[in-house]
Length: 264
Image (cartoon, rainbow, N blue to C red; front, side, top):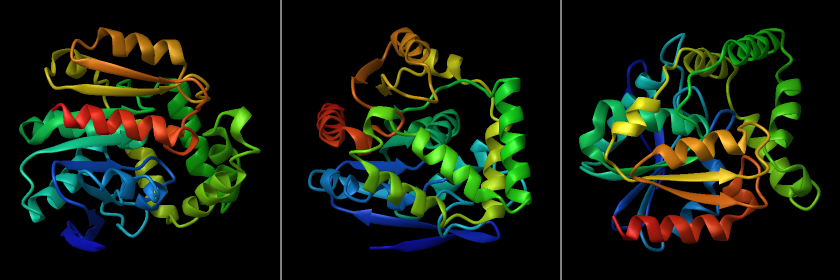
């Protein structure tokens, strides 16, 4: 059932499915909780699944000029507090992974563990910050369609673009549901995020890394090395996925998540 809870000057919208151990699904940049349609209901056959529109995306409004990841973690905590959820497993796709790491830093006691789903613990490089500034400029010039038409297909492995064209189109449609001011606030927040590598090394919490071998955004070897250094980490390498494994190889992702959470 779709619900909302007040958060700062706006509200956070979320959905709540199933029962059992709690899994919270956090979408990525230019996505909304709708991106989990098809995936969340399958998980909800076994677990209680909460999907959230991260503030600035979907129906959750902008609350600051910069939506830093700690603030977004506070939004997630607001939902959990409202639902009286004491423990959860966080699954963060891309930007959602950055929020998951911020949540781990602030609210570790509420976590069973996390899944970094095509996400890294690194801060933005200077080159990446410059790219985000260019995206902000495009949005301010009213050219966000250029952004969508470039970024959305890049999320999928090149080999999958034709056969998954319906999913690419749907992701493009979902991106269009996001307000310009919210996109900019989240771009500013991602630019400002700190490096979280030490947090992963020291966490002691179970961490599942889901990595696409054909990811156009994250070099496979780079994130694989991080996963190997994480003492409590487990790795799912997706042979035929880019940055959208839950769309490209959903059964593999579902089976792994189901098993991982079952053993927590």
